[in-house]
Image (tube, rainbow, N blue to C red; front, side):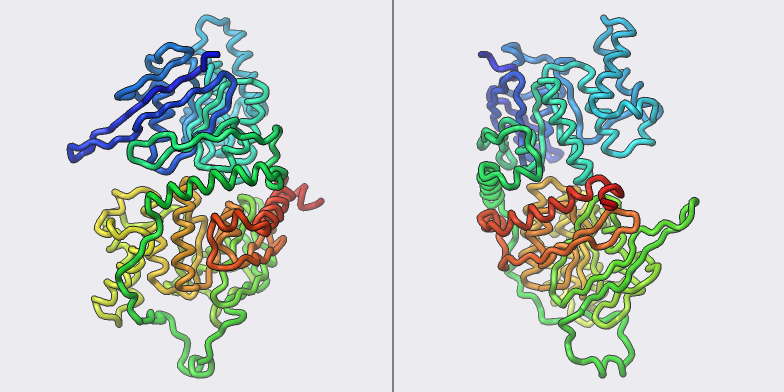
Length: 559
């Protein structure tokens, strides 16, 4: 039987500003059967969007051919519906009118009644029948992406193309939209090609998973059949031996590709033996009385509350948060969106006023921000007009004014080398990818030699393959420094890989600690080795089960 879609040696290059050219697609070959769901996994910058845009007819390949039912495609058409990563909706139009625009454009031969019925059917299919009259500003990010999916489906395409449509969403919203996509696959029997950066997403949804090799001249490295029975429940598949084996195989393959590309950097610079200045030292008598180094109860959260004023009265976001950490401990903070994880972190950083209770770090109550508490945010906060070296130097010069210029330079170079930026130190932040910028942010945080390292979803905006790379960077540098650290994350694997304990938070408002999981896995930890350890899957199941319990907000809490 003839495939519905065939790609034959598809190639694409782009001219650079300096006059040279970059090979993006280096010969893509792929056959897609009618009704099949294909997931395409690839590294950041591997040309995933160029590939999906070529199939959609928005980008013309330099060589090769793309055949739809045996005929070469000629530009975009209604037979291929595309959903982008960022939802492009008209803000002044309702949900119904946004979808209606697409229907009116491609179904001019149908009556007004038929077109209206089609709009209603597709909006209801994505679960937005109750929001037909709402404008995009009144919708959450997940709801807006559903409108984009409804709009693409309303064109009644033969192939639905999804270009990382869920990557910018939080884990819970992403899970719910994955369920919607699975329901659409089942009910519509449509051919679907999903570009994703998430291995679990690919395995939950697809019939086959194709993995792209890293840039330049990307090709399809390997294709796997996903022989896991449907329906696939994200909690239940975790216990499926076939799923575990397939997941391990794909992750190992991606890891080998990542190793070939080069990840964590070595440094030929020796880190100088200098300690940072204490920019807010306690009184002399206090320092003399407490000369012995504190190891236990190094960081303590005591009856911590956070209350925000609202027009309807005070809103308690975090309530009675109690936790004790020893020096050098790494804790992950996990929970659904809105549960107050970032609120706890910003209070620990001294950036957010504490309503009641307190946080004590190294025998001192936290009441202000300072370089002794380094923060890495989700969005890399760099000066775009400065180089990588200059951005790290801003903090180093502040906390090491007593060190020589050569020692400060060595500190900067050491950490930039360690995060894999040895060849990009003089590159402006504005010229870097998000992954590279976040590496600079991590180097800057470690270079401060802080008492406390706070990480607020630092890899949340990155594709999962770049995220793995930076997790390895973080693990490697943390193994050397053993700085006390708290990391907010939505990623269950990340939480277990990095932490000594996983702190699970209940849903907000009045969020608090629901459960604490001690991660008894040997360090240093290796991702591939973890996939062999049965304890890893037990821990994973425990966290997934907790998150599933709190999937339905206050109702689940009451239960």
